[in-house]
Image (cartoon, rainbow, N blue to C red; front, side, top):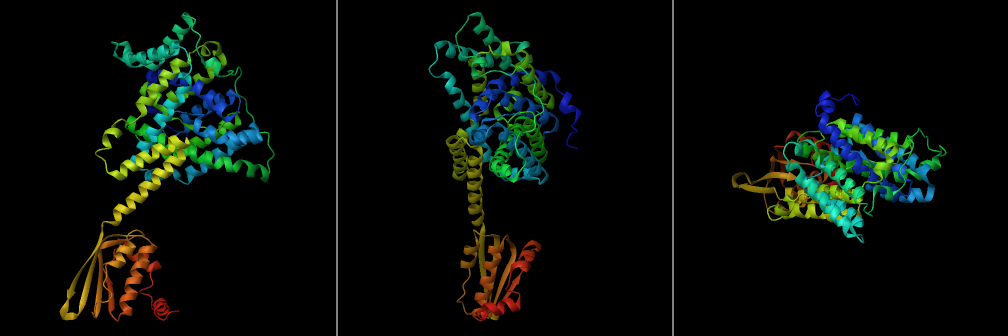
Length: 497
């Protein structure tokens, strides 16, 4: 059942999950406000969305310990819709996005993650680490020395605090960083950028809100071109993040359940006045690094977020952005796969090209979907090219019976079909040709067409042709699409009809 989760997912790590959830909630606030500004909506739209999405995915998501909320990748896709049609159409598009994601879950599209190679995931991770770091640069440009000192101090707390005996391991260092840097900023009355400068925090709880748009085909035509890419990018980022968290925690997750969970969360966000969102790799890494492992950490993050912005807004607004920048730099450093730089010398060129292409496209376009698409496409082409080399044809001549025996081995498909055809000598004067496919496998219509071509050519030269040794899968596809063993079809080919 979607709503049923193991007791261990909720109560197996209570202290760690609660503390990690608090850290994540604090880090979510400025990001949710920033993403709202990107989308062109009021800050409360992003904050309500982050609360709603986090709380709902805590119950129905497929990956315990993963944080979902309003994200920059999704916000970028909403800009034109908000500008041209307004907030209400954004809420309607958010609802449709959720419906499409639920449909994707029931169609088991989450299983498509198996087609994403390790090099694409590494490129995705590295690109996100770079983007997370780049997103902090505006807070570090044209500022006073106090900001650099606060950021450096925050990083020092994050990396050195865990070495303090006893207490160092019991309290997440990012939380200590945020609290201590806020205390320093208030005590010394430092004039630096704070969370309150990002935008007005909401002072009321979200309420149920059905989008004020006409339920017509015209409305659907307006929102569908936005909902489709939102659904795709949201699922892509969520499933990639789930894969990364799986590796960080050495556990597995249900990708199809995650699709449905993200869909339900976005429907909930749309009904509470929030924008569409998805999993956040940065916040998920903060959660894991702070000791969060279970669903409780995601629930606490969403709940604390709302409680703090509504009831503790006076204090939250005083948190210096430098402290949060330090936390995000820590996330960037921790997210980047530094071993991938060392592996550039050891891994094959094709693997390195796929990884680097994914990084470049994601960073260049700021669109995760484009980067992953390019990476998967390149990986597929390299794989097809590599497999095509593992195909060959050997032959022996039985002079006594004037028979040439061709033994085919390897994989025959669209990329190796021409090589397969070229391996036969159609001009050799023999009475019979035997094509032994015992060690070969035919995968597609292109390969079957190549086999037909070979058989028909030999028959045109007057040789008797016998095809032997087909395995069950090859025999099935040849029987469905081949014509060399169908007299009526052969008659048409040989007769020129």
